[in-house]
Image (tube, rainbow, N blue to C red):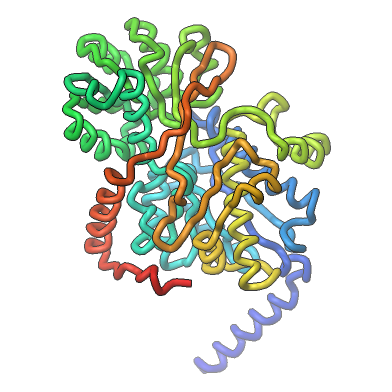
Length: 440
């Protein structure tokens, strides 16, 4: 009887597969974890729109990737870890080959999915966020914190402070505070900042802000009392504009605040009005503005009414970041197809695509994103990409202006931290690190 049941189940599966339309067998599925509601929606919406618009543009302009149509489905997380996990479980097996990859847009959700992705063999593309040590692909085989971890960001922020002061030696005796979202996201830079404080003998203080970040009066009264030389801001959503307003209320100079790249977009400054003028933030490489790729998006997506974006949003910081997220993901799939053929890729094949993804200057120009992204190359060992660079831009009251040259995070500081923390994680989870010298 047991053998008969298995036979019936197999036959049913075969019938279901035969019943699936041929077109559906030739589709690449993209699960989109979004938050269009709640306290973080003002930031989550433009990112989600940039992600979706680029995928739609590839369908409209090119018919997908190498003849493979791209399909997508959004799932609302509200930035909540439990809802993010529910969305993951619901979407991971959709499409003929399952999910291509997941982009959680939340460090908390990333921490949870890091435990699940290896078993499901689905990559996590965490563009500019997630676990900083997950750049070590020998241990974190499925995580890709592409083009910037929070340790990279914190290191660049300290480099910029040192430059404004006149050199690293001028950091001695200074006070630098971190106002951070009290979550895995906000806590990520602390280890690097503590290491830098020890190296340069400056005073470092970490100041948590409870979700969602609309109550910060006590934190900024403390800052007024402490009188730090600089404040670093690791906020998200409404927390960022609240921080700027509270800084103004205690007369803390906005040009002495440097936000991480998730605290440096239009929704972070416009609610604060004139109070935001002078505020600075890091750039995750790309600035605001329109580039060659935007003409295709406007022609094939916006003009056809196939977007949820507002016209003024196209080209803003977070919209552009969403596009970059989809560009990296689709280019990884394109890379995988060169090895595995022009068909829907499995998550395991997409991971190979990420680890072998190289965007040269020529390819970046072909994609229409020259000026948005530096050349980058990923590998088994390096899931961040070899370009650990960032700049600083400043809000002048009306627009963002790039005010710095490129900074490169100091790998003499970062690499040992990555190696040590990844090794501890591997020991805790009983993971045998891959030998990347033998990976192809």
